[in-house]
Image (cartoon, rainbow, N blue to C red; front, side):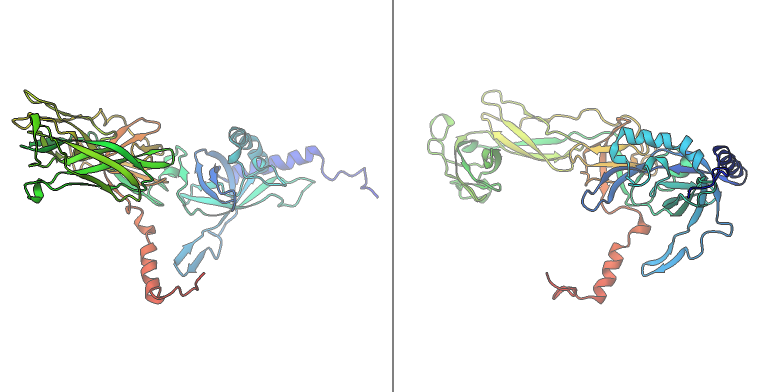
Length: 483
């Protein structure tokens, strides 16, 4: 039998009345909280775990605090790592208010990027609060994470549900990006999680080099006659000993490898010391060049020959490595009054400094030391970084998110360096590279980067490992078994 048609189990008008009364009660007895939706940036398709997410929107909604006698009992749990404070709260919000004033914005997030949405096979996820979203509780000035959404309590009064009950737990920060533009919220996590510090200076310095001129019988140039094949690492270049018999007079050089297809070969040979005393003959040029051997590197076949000259560049010295180089600078050597001008190249290290100057051609005819000029830097030290923007290292390609910014007037009052506190790093930065802001376009040179500098209260790994080593002996075998 069907229900009695003369008795309504809740008309639309009655349902509207109940919803309006609930909305009014929430506005009278409730508190304003901020609903902060989670946007998933990256997830694991195998384990379906959220790897990177951000919170950059906020919506105010009135909520009734159901915890009349404080945080839920049993929120404080003693674990083997110490006391864990869960601090659970239950909040009741209006279904109608959420669906009319928040759901449309969440639907817009879904339309903009499908991966932001966590699917629920029964309920459209944008139609209700979502587990994993955050609630800012202003009375305690804390962030809570929604762990469960109760959508059917009370159970269908007059044939409908009217509220959502949010079961929330104190939020445990895990390097998510939080940028709601509300200082009270964003400041809660600026110094939490894995934080590294970058000390930036406005300008780099130009490297300085000098040349030493040799005498009779120098290696002026090494010509590669066969580039060889199948080198997996850089081979060693050995030059025959100088006829003077003095070890310091022996010329030295390094091989520069290159890849052609899947095969690595020797691309060129650069001189690091031109040596002296090698026999010469006609018009200052060597007749029988010294023997050059190329060994190692797991390859074979590379061959080279040398040209010997008089009064060329013996070697180049880096007096000041400079800083802030992004690309290898050009090296210019002044020429002799009569003869051939020497040429050289610079070698950069990972810190953006000139670590070495290598001779391509030592030239000849120098009677005094020439001037060595290393190209300067492009202009940097401009712009102002923005909290929560992404930064990128020019050499490493590493990205991170700015959590906090500090001017280090304790180091230099007139021109203080900038210290960035960053998180969500994709790798390691290099000292000397230029750090550029994605939104601000600010660009400064990284002077000091500490990989081990992060939130000290959370740095317990070494302590745990040290204590574990005192209990379990890993030196002889794995106590948990071998695989």
